[in-house]
Image (cartoon, rainbow, N blue to C red):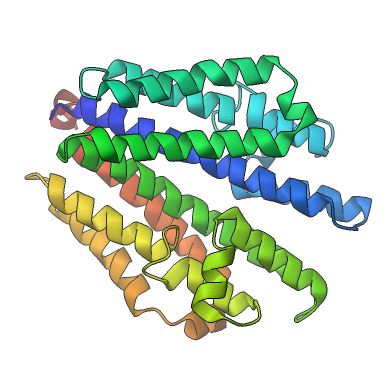
Length: 317
């Protein structure tokens, strides 16, 4: 496969997943904002949301305060923010358009109609009148894109690169949410009612609330939340599940220069397989997640180097 084609497929999937993750975080934050809290606590909550994606500096350059309206505008509409929902869905559509011949008609039409419907929503008043409904629409379109892709695409390298983009982005996002949320949770009393709502909101942000109840059948505790979202192999958005998918898809697309990248991914996967949540919490969850996020960034760069950069550029390097 041409590296340029692989690049478009990879980033089409990453941008679609990123838009969904942003919608998930915003939806849960709006629900959390309905709980009784001080103005300072509310502001900290919105600023923490910016911190998850490392967008605080970019936000502060354009907006005076992290109010609900300003943060939603920045993370949904702002075209200058490359991680906004509008920017992500636009980039997903543009990458899909560049490889229309590789995609099935159904996949292209899904990406294109998502972008067209987005323009209507942004010009209308749905986001102001019912933001929860808008975020559900974003999540639904991402689910639809993923389902149509898996059900209609040939099970070949094209699908492998789409899956690589999806699971690499998902692993990065889950780790960021855990890191920021657990740092903020340190200010909440252990075993308190606020802690319960905080952990429940964290689970809902990755569609894991019902899964938690099914797996543990007990009270929600920070340690078990971390274990579920990091080390549970059959939890779709856990770090372990994402890395297993990355390793499997890298194995399917391996080439003559990708050995070190495959080994790096396998070592990151093995770390999670052998990890114990009590040991991770004792050594410091923030330290481990910082290491994991750095490793994901390196892995993304290695995948780009081995598969996505045009052959001429690779030779020159």
